[in-house]
Amino acid sequence: MKALLLDVPLKTAHVTSLPTPTTAPPSHLLLHTSHIGLNPVDALYTFHPLAPPSSPPRIIGSDFSATVLSGPLPRGTLVAGFLQGAASSNPLPGAFAEYITAESDLVWRVPEGVSPAQAAGVSLCGLTAAQMVFWRLGVPAPFGYVPRGENKERLPGTWDGSREVVTVFVYGASTSVGMYAAQLVRKGFEAAGVRVRLVGAASKARWGLLKGGTYGYDELVDYREEGWVENVRGWTEGGGGWILRWIACRRGRR
Image 1: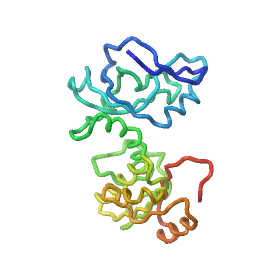
Image 2: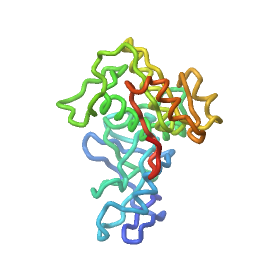
Image 3: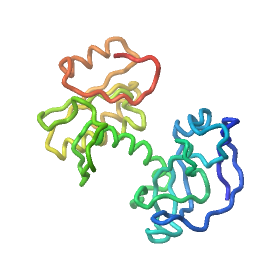
């Protein structure tokens, strides 16, 4: 099979031929990959490997959609998910290969109406947003999610169930993770009977999309214009809200 391998000492990747896997470990699926999704971390961990320079080549890549060949799910099932290809020093292979293995409880069945190409772009961004919204902020999940054990990563000053109206400001509202976050925040609070006011920062070219029913932003600012910080403070009455920042950069407004 063809696979994209990370060369740790050279900090690059190349396509090569590898033996095709024919079995998967217990509780894992053997999958035939149909589509992959590109994420900034894929390039990040290629040019800045986390593994020691002496590490052998490894398959990189995160997001994928694939068809089940064998394992706990029926053969032919279309699934999607992501692997931690080169995201740590462990030797586990990533998703950028024609055939891969994945833990069966870490993939999701692709529903009708969602193409394999669309599904390949969901998992990493969607889970990143969900981790922040439900796990770190404590927003009530609109599904049967019950945290296991003590959550030591929950941020101070987050949701405690005492407010009837919550203001959430999303910096980077038109980014992939930002758009997932807006939907999850709204769905979670609406299911709990709490009114949420969404305020976002994005270029004006994206405002029409962001004000639509899927995202439903109440207020938007253009981060390139003067005075947008004061506008946000006014809408949040100087505080009492949360800020979700989905753009990592050295310079930013506070």
